[in-house]
Length: 116
Image 1 (cartoon, rainbow, N blue to C red):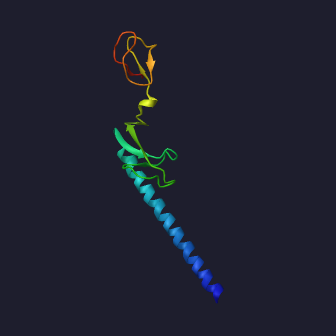
Image 2 (cartoon, rainbow, N blue to C red):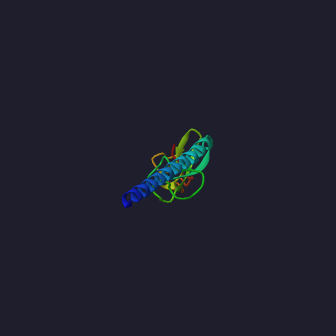
């Protein structure tokens, strides 16, 4: 009798866990699907540094690992982070002058522009 009760209890717990896991996956796919459709134009979204496929329209935690999501910008047709640390700046008159941050050219004093 004890064995039947324990087996039934185990089966109920296992099936409940499976239902919850499937529901969470469906919710995550719906959220990511909405975000992808909205990224057709220049837009801001939030992504996980460990799971770049996770793209949500508001800040929060990654549904896969629980890390904080990072604000990212998607250009029309292109996706990429807008971070000054990743950009390179140069002088239009002196292309050999480059910098990792905005500023003035040391040779002519012109503003440095983002290198294309």
